[in-house]
Amino acid sequence: MQIQPLSAGLGVTNSTYDAAASAAEHAKFSEELRKVQQQAEASSSSQTDIEAQKRREKLKEACEGFEAMFMNMMYREMRNTVPEGGLFKKSNAMNIFEDMRDTELMKVAAKGGGIGLADMLYKQLSPQVESQIKELAINKF
Image 1 (cartoon, rainbow, N blue to C red):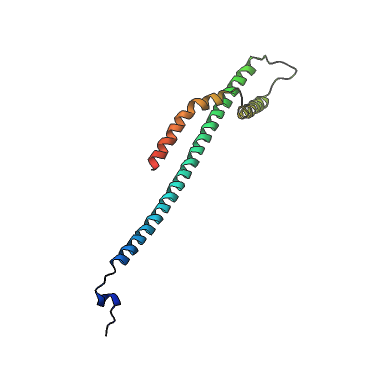
Image 2 (cartoon, rainbow, N blue to C red; image 1 turned 45 degrees about the horizontal axis):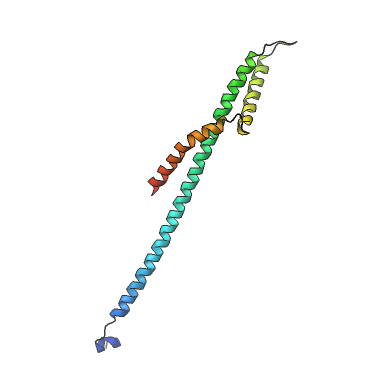
């Protein structure tokens, strides 16, 4: 003997129950899908922000490096204008030491603000980097 549901024998259908269950399941699925999409967007936007910050830092470092190199060349040429003299003749080791010292001195000076060349270069080149960042963000979505 097979047991029939009570509604089967009465001719009453559970269409409202089935419709409500289907609607609830659809709503739950939609909510889960929305949460996953938000997490994906947050993850990709944070990655884009990290990449953008890295690009800005690389540009700043390149500008400071250029300023340091420019200042080093300028300092070297200024040093060449000073006549050599004194009790002892400069050795090759002393020339190498002075060149290395001057290079490091100009690197420190450029990082500390220098003559403002790095800041001016950064201001001029940053719009190009920002446009690249925007293109990167658009292409990710």
